[in-house]
Length: 136
Image 1 (cartoon, rainbow, N blue to C red):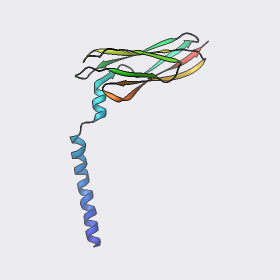
Image 2: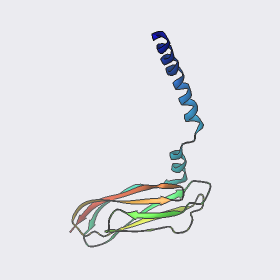
Image 3: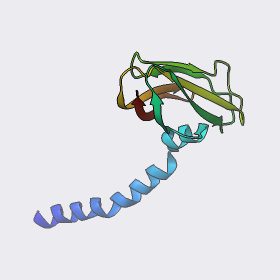
Image 4: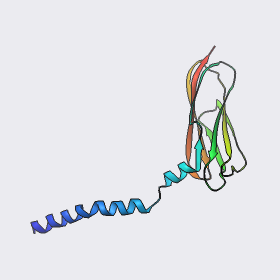
């Protein structure tokens, strides 16, 4: 009985890598497909020092690298001190689009803000970030 259990365990272990390779090679990676749909020029921007009381415009640009149009469905800044604008029309394959964040630099000191972007290619938001220091 003990030999049977050991033999069964060895058989399972011996065939596990075989089945793991078959399954992982047969299913295309969703993350890879989404990553290929949009190519961001920069996902994080350091704006350096900015004066207090003057809004700063930060522009994120991307290229549609997929074979079909991409639509920006939602852009959500992380706080009320940031507003956003973006390309409202479908971005055709090979064409460029943008997301802009306007940061109201009210408080002096370092900051880091994010903007979450949801597109027709992925319901999981892409997080873009910018940072800097507000000076007097």
